[in-house]
Length: 173
Length: 181
Image 1 (cartoon, rainbow over the protein chains, first blue to last red):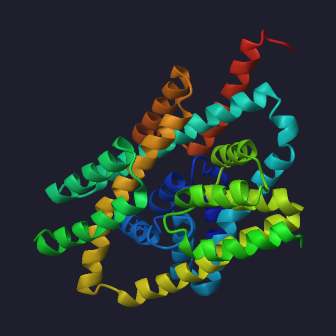
Image 2 (image 1 turned 90 degrees about the horizontal axis):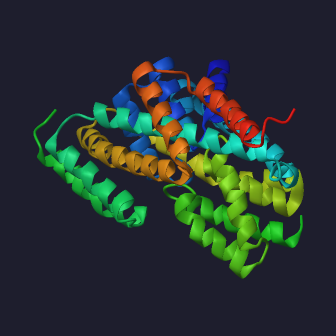
């Protein structure tokens, strides 16, 4: 139980700009609780569940390792540090927002957090099996969402059945 | 519990089950209720608080915690957070049980693999968005790119990099304002 709590506590604490990138570093690279493929597949399922996908991922990983209590511990570990930090920040916001040092630190930390996400996104992409159908699907998604600024939900709803059909009809194993 | 907090809580219990893809997709709807319909916050407060949640560590659904805190202090924060996370928690828990019981059944394996390029495409798009919004100046963009290559090629610890850029940000401001002591 304690390793589960500690791992997810770290993920929450370090998750600047979203906890996805740090989740991958902790769960796949450091702890090796998930293989690369499991991580992407599990996250894929969690994207279709309500709520934040990384919170669902914590419930999955905690539950698989230690049952219901594991899910609870992973969930609490993940959200406790961010909640404490955000409440401190919000309650001191009227003072802090006037402090140029704080503002400057926060903006550079956000840029650094963005860099971590870029690195993890590229790594996930480079580890995706190099099938032509996969590359086409990734390119269509990025073009629609990042390029044309289309709303995520309709794009995903259209592309997912296509992706699963591609997978079912192709022979790659 | 005051009326606005009660209203928000009942609303969040429903929203929790609808917020597929996280809070981001629900943001326009949340803005409609909180700002336009009920006037609990002004548009400026809403976007300032959301920006703060983006900059702070953690999933950005902690914005819900902040809304509860603004409406009803610590108790409010606890209530809205629970309302928004509890239904989703149980959905995830039972989905996990399903995942385990499906095991390696062929159709489930096909679905899981079919989802892989979708997930990677979504993550690449959100990386693009986040890098865009945080790049408020060329040096900021440079920090993003340097961090990305340090993490990618050197496996640097994210904790150290974030701490380092926080200190760096303070130092930049200190120099910019003429080195006061």
